[in-house]
Amino acid sequence: MTKCDSSVNFELSSRKDYVKMKTLKIFILFMLLSLSVLSAQNRYVASVPIHVSLVKGLSLNIMKNNLDFGEVILSRTGTLIKKSATEGIIFEISGNPNKNVAINYSTTNLTNSAWSEIFGGTKGNINFIPDVFVSTEKKQSELQKIENGNLVNIDKSNDGKILVNIGGYLNVAANQPAGNYIGNIYLTVSY
Image 1 (spheres, rainbow, N blue to C red):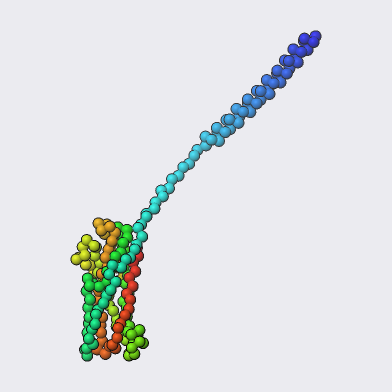
Image 2: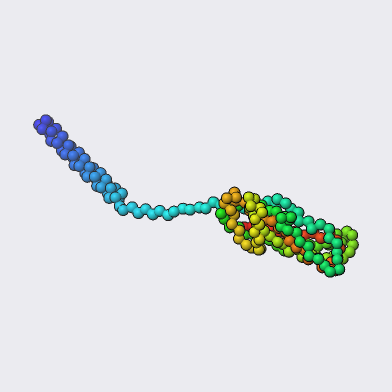
């Protein structure tokens, strides 16, 4: 009878293990199916292009920084003094080839106030009217007149460089006070 009890016990124990194993397998199968259903959902992908345009920064170098009208003898009628752009100030603009650059410059008044304070005399002003031209280093003889605020294209065949030549006019009045007149012209460049 012991033998019989033992086999019944063994049979019952195996059956419980079998049911547990079966339940565990069903549970694992259910989990795997659930995960596969979740991962099998539709995916949506969108793409957006990214763009950047890198532009070489502008630089402005003074190549020739003197616009000297020399010594002028005052006359009773006044006089108009001219310096050509080729005799004047030369700036070099370096920038991104084939890009437009705005060139702005100022008119200016020359004054003798520093001279008159040292040597005495009447203070005076003379209006300087700039005459501005652009060219490339390769074609310096081909000057092109520009007005304040004009856009100029940086020639791609010239390594991104433009020359700005500045001359101009001084209208000296008949009663202009004597003295050394000085002033500054300002050139601004921007894309």
